[in-house]
Image (tube, rainbow, N blue to C red; front, top):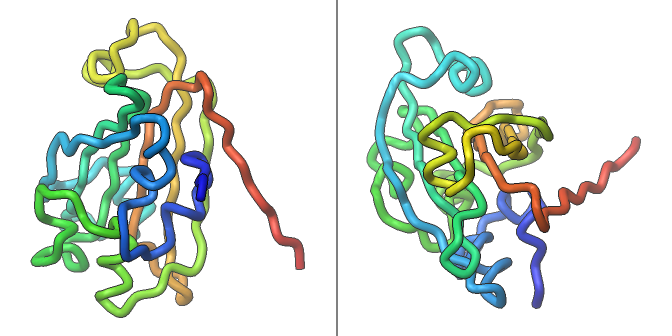
Length: 175
């Protein structure tokens, strides 16, 4: 089965096998590398999206996504510390089935996500180095907040991706 690595719904579904990126890019030499997993005071935009108070912290999982050993995306996923502490979300290891599997195991069901796509973002120096591009190279930024059915945000993913070869595909249900 071929999955689209740019289909956001795949990243929100609990899985029993490989994570969504690995499954979607296996035929193209896809892989991911964990850069860091830390508990920190998040930037204001992340704190606002997760509805965190001023003193609350978040767990961030920073990953570099690769195709044929070439970096194509930096994915930073953020979780409220109260949710992630003591779970695989806070461990610096790959998660079988991805983060949605952990969220489901906690008894939470992701119901929907809001996404913002910025097509003319500029990477900072560290991001440019990780993506192996000049600092003036334009990249796409995807900012996704995933919610439970009671409108509680449980995950924010802030991804910076090289636009070449990427197609963001959406289905919008009306009514």
